[in-house]
Structure formats: structure tokens, C-alpha cells
Image (tube, helix red, strand yellow):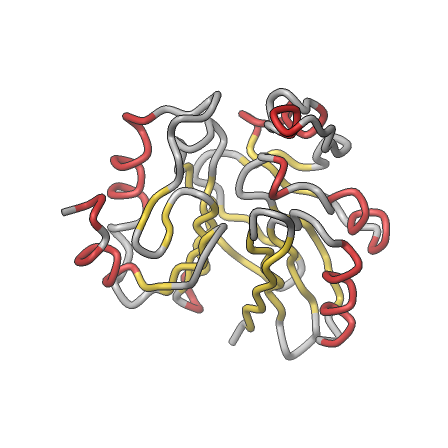
Length: 209
């Protein structure tokens, strides 16, 4: 049974997830947005051994600690091809809007649509959930009945679609088609805010009523 550890980091409180396997201590780091020292301290407390960094999308609040952790653990970064250039572009990753320059080196691996990815002993499906951003993806860990939804689906809400690169007409249909077709008991771990379940969001989220 995989363990999901959430840390909220950075000025706009983005969630970074450490998905660890208690049997061998291997771990995936998802969306390390800021505070690399905080993240490495927690990883050491867990006695985890990171094997990869996964990005649900490449907005600045989800990538700020990418290079620090990538170099510290000597691990690759995975990202959707649609946002390959965003890591090096403050304009595209929106850090320029704040007068900052948040960047990271290119990803070592670009996800393919509907791909089942196997890293170490982890296996998960990558599904495209764009709308908030063109390369937004969610990670489905079917055996453990949870989904990391990035900034697509939140508890009681959905991601913003008024940002450069957003597409308002895509987000809701993609969530319905790619996420709401999964079993309702699946837990969701979003890019901001609290966790929830697909059943709860299908029945109470105001964006789907």
C-alpha cells in the first residue's frame, strides 16, 4: 500500500506530494513547487529514496524546487510535452507576472497520452486533463485507488481557466471523461487545498451540478 504524504509549500500554498513505498522506501516527488529544504527534510524523516519528479503541469508554483531536488537526489523529471518549454520560460510558467523568474532545466522524460508509466516499483496511468493549462495531466494509481489531479480538480472547485494558456471549454469535459469515469471511492489529491473523493466531487462540487 503506497503512502501519500502532502506538504503545502510556497506563497500560494501549493501541494507537493511524496508518494512512497513502505516496503523499499522508493518515492515519487510530485509538484515540488517551493521550499526545497522543507521537502528534503520531510523526505529524510520518511527515510524515503526518491526515484523521480513528476509534474502535473508547469506553472511556477509547482516547479520552484524542481532543480534543487533533481540535483540533490540525481533523479529525472517527467512532464507533458505540451509544456516542455514552460520550465525555461517565466512568461509561460507565469512567474513573470509576479516580477520573478522561476525556471528549471528541461524535463528528461515527456509523457505520452494515456501512458502507463512504470518507474522502479511504481505503476500509474497518465491522463490528460487540460483546461487550466494545455499540458495539465492527472496521475491515476489504480491499485491504491487514488488520483493526483494537479490544478484540474479540487475539493469543491476546479482550476482557474482565466490564465494565459487556459481553455475554459476543455476543463469540465476532461474531468468528466478522464476522472469521473473512475470508481467513486478513489481519493483525489489536488494541487491546492484538501483531499477528497471522486464520489464527493461528483455529487457536491458546484461546477458539476
